[in-house]
Image 1 (tube, one colour):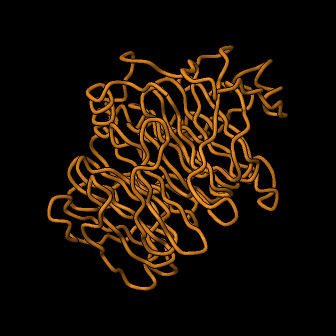
Image 2: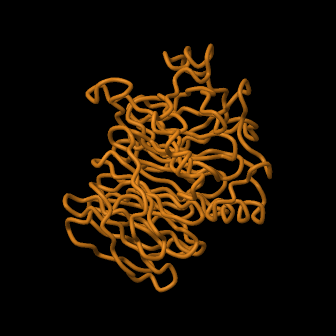
Length: 377
């Protein structure tokens, strides 16, 4: 597979990290009506491996894999070939790139492992057994980790250069996802059914916004926060595990709509025009148009997709239910890519006739608008 040049990719990942999300600069994936193509790459033992996480460092793709022998972080080339394989904890769950190193959270072993560019272990930070770290974020200066264990209810801030803890801040019940909007840190509290906005320097909670039931991943598109709601009661009882995605304006916290997608919504990614969503229980992914939330299609993925990474041309999807990574593009450069056939769902049918019919605007939006006009952040 031919990818963007090293310089182009490095610039893209730097821009994504700083929130300059490639609006109108460089390739994005398919618009409505275009065909998507996909292929799958095996990265572990087919009998026991699961791919939990994935991140792009500007040149290579890194995946977190767990199998019967423990946890592994594997560095892949542009073609998907495994360059290095490093044993890490029990089940590496989420990863982030800080511009020089890969940071890996392991919920099961309650630690953070930091890898160098060659895949070697630079440092392992052992946390309290009850910390159970999950979400992780690099904001351009600090590394933030969501401590998801029972009773932890905190996020930790690390100096990315010295790799040392600066401070922990209490947030809400079972924090999971993290995002940076260029000024503030956003944290989803999965059992608090809300998202909080933190002062980056002090960790102070500045605002708390309600979400649906069980908010998990969160991503910033340059203007809005998109929040994966794992089981939104507004679209059916939680027992049905119906998922949705909430669009929240970062400035003012205005709820711009909640859009039903698949089941057990987990990983999110932004490609410059579209929001990509992992529907873990359905073994599918959905794309929404970022401007208005219109559904662009739902497509098959591997087993239990959980995490995504965009390299400027391809969307890479970690499938936590099997040993594969799905690679999706609108302009295939390799014969292994085959056209993907959209999966017609009830939500797709609704969206095809009335693209905004599935969205819901918060009744408190007018009050939020007034607050924003008065200078509310």
